[in-house]
Image (cartoon, rainbow, N blue to C red; front, side, top):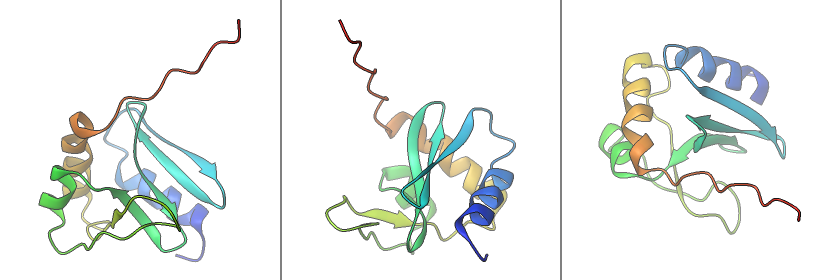
Length: 107
C-alpha cells in the first residue's frame, strides 16, 4: 500500500459486509467507526485497533504499542487480509468499545 488513502479504502473493502462502518481523515491518518464507536485507525505505523478482549483473542500475535506519543497502546492489525476474521473481530469488539460522547450543545 503506497499511502493511507489506499489503505483506508482497502480496510473499508475488507469490512464492506458490515453495515455502519465509516472512516474520517484525521491528522494524516484515519479514524474508523463501527456503529458510531471508534474501533481503530490508521496511524504512522499502519492500521491499529483498540486493545480489547476481542481484539486480543483474534490477534494473539499482536503486541500493543502506542500509535503516537502519549496515546494508549493499541494493537497493530495482523489479520487485515483475512476478511472474515477481521469482520468477526470488529463485531465482537463493539460491546467493549466506549460509546461516543454526545457533542455539547451551546446554550
